[in-house]
View (cartoon, rainbow, N blue to C red):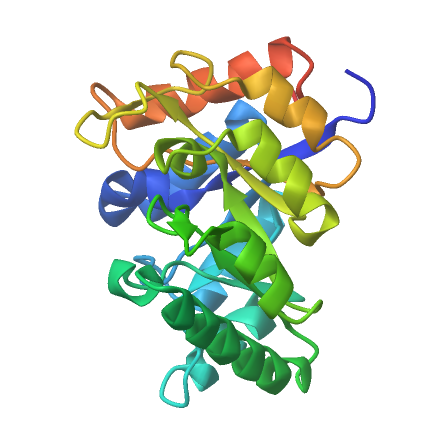
Length: 254
């Protein structure tokens, strides 16, 4: 596929292994060929230590997951952006209860808009990463459409395509509708059951090539994330990379 985008790994996938050997696991990720990484809040390494290691291994940091940057967490979020030299941070999730009604979703958008304005003063753009509960019909309106309408243009979406599909929508159509509002795309795979563990990308039920094709002109990064899986997670991360690169879906280093 022409116009391949670089591939990154959301390091949360390897959280258990990173807790035991942060440096060794990050070196393994770099050796696989991943172009970049996406850190997460609570990594078992200091920001400076992690940033120095990523720089040494020439791993680009495409963004980072952070808790909602309210007044109590704003300073730590901006410190993360500074350490990794980031212009984008992503709110990792908001509770399911905040998406139960149309008015609740609008309140979420208002909160994100306010937080975005605060962060823009530090030249950091704020985004939101979905799970499965953000995709439903609310009084005849799709939650995604409400968010795209209510969120300021400066607030971007990081579409988790697997959770969108589990939430009942066609992930290909979701990324098409989001278009350029979703510069970061999470790729994961599995049976599409909430109860099952996930698989390596390419080994499940997701239409990965179609998702990548649909985002070829709008995505800046395709990011592998595996929340949980049967077997060895490091192998699943490697298998995901091999599937994506061998099928010319993403750009890796090896």
